[in-house]
Length: 60
Image 1 (spheres, rainbow, N blue to C red):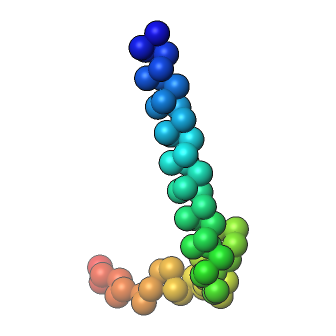
Image 2 (image 1 turned 120 degrees about the vertical axis):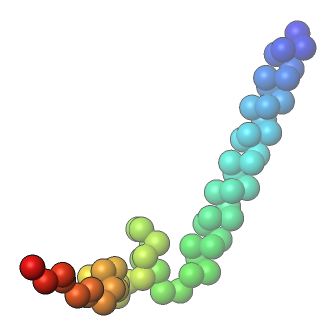
């Protein structure tokens, strides 16, 4: 009986924590004005932004 109560209380607590974290993520996504809603990256992100400046290639 005690095991069932502990298991149910853990399940209820984890459900509440999941809802709180989900709500925080949703609120942060709503407050971020310049991000793509699908991946969380800036909408005008370019390859140059990701790769950065080109590093010099070693000579042979």
